[in-house]
Image 1 (cartoon, rainbow, N blue to C red):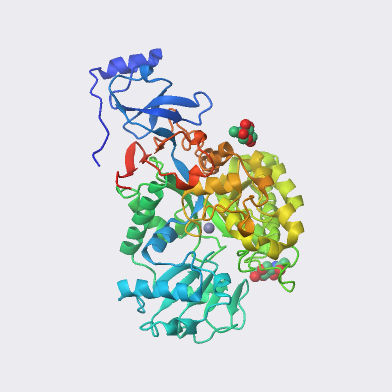
Image 2 (tube, protein in one colour):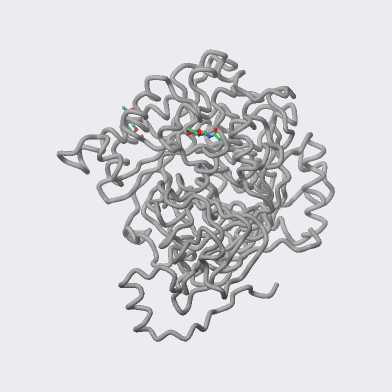
Length: 572
Ligand SMILES: *[C@@H]1O[C@H](CO)[C@@H](O)[C@H](O)[C@H]1NC(C)=O
Ligand SMILES: *[C@@H]1O[C@H](CO)[C@@H](O)[C@H](O)[C@H]1NC(C)=O
Ligand SMILES: [Zn+2]
């Protein structure tokens, strides 16, 4: 599609512009600015919430906002449609999304036969995959759909796959299912792995949480070229649904170095707020990550946070609970790190200047995350109150899924930021109450409205859930599953709809709140002078849409740093 930019060649001398600017003559556009007008612009800025036009400077930021088309310079580009600020996903995995697009998609597979069929048809198209150097990969299976855990034997049913190297991640990526060829690489499988599980019933083949390392250390790491192509396809997919930015919840140092190079290229069309993750989880590795690199001038990549992991996921009974699971009374899940060590590692990263973002799903993990932050404030902000310290460092809890009322109160008291995925609530509602029982479900689980005063960051955890932020907004405002439009067990009611947000709150969760959580307030998630010129064009104003419209809504255009990065073709 032809670029819409049309550089103004207004015959001002630079001096005139400077004088005009000094005198505050607001109507004078800068020479290199381009002005765009739309039917409607929702800026989310307090001073001018609704506008018609805006100018974009050559540095890719907004320079001027115009309430009416008459105020805008005559030489402007008029495009039909309604604009909102570019959207951000507060917790996603870009590399994982790219890999998902390029490997077997097992999401929504309804039976073992269905899953194996998908593997088989992928293999037909990619006959060279499955070697020792290039394992056949996929993501999205769920044993709940199989009626039992899968095993390595299951692959033997597919012709041609018997000796192939296969590793398929569970829907929540907390377990992998591997083939016999992979098992043969592991001669001495231990009985137990702390913080992990080796499944043996009904047979071998599945490794969960910390036990995944036994397998993944043999997995041939993708080449840089392959990684770069994954990132590119993931970013295209994200632009298509209106995303201009993402908080990537865990990027290891070598990938970060690749990102730094890719961020200079045209293919880098999404801003990335990367949470550093050490190659060995929950350790300390600032020297490898490149000590606190902060943000690039162009705002396309920033590293000033670290991702730690307190526990696993609810689906596989891996999240760490204060009390045992209701449907597995012998277990209360497992911590990936004990409370003492979580405190120590949090303090170390905090003292190094990092924002610390802790993955915590179960109520015990969330409790220890709060404890770890509380233990860090006095070290990093002597003489400040815990609340003031938290406001400067913005520590976050990633997922914040099941939280004891006492800890909800502490999170409120100190202003700890919850980073929430509304579609996790609507995917997990099928089994959450079985795991937790009615009491914990109604008092502790999947809070959203209860946390609204904390400006929760919303996201999808893509590729675990689809990246489409409008589906996230739908889940947040209806507490129904965007895939079915239904609540729990096919009900038309939302699941615990007392925790539903309204649309404004949901939109903030994908704009201003992630901006704040990335130290980008006034720069991202808002259309105002000085902010990144990132915007999304919709057919009609977002605030006019009904909940169901969010499910079918198609983004018309996505712009990042003043450049068109996605345009819907007329055929779509
Ligand atoms: C926590 O874990 C570390 C390392 O595994 C161990 O050395 C320490 O004793 C544990 N502390 C407690 C209180 O369990
Ligand atoms: C949404 O909730 C906020 C409070 O968080 C309230 O101020 C606003 O009026 C509500 N918006 C709508 C459209 O109900
Ligand atoms: Zn995640």
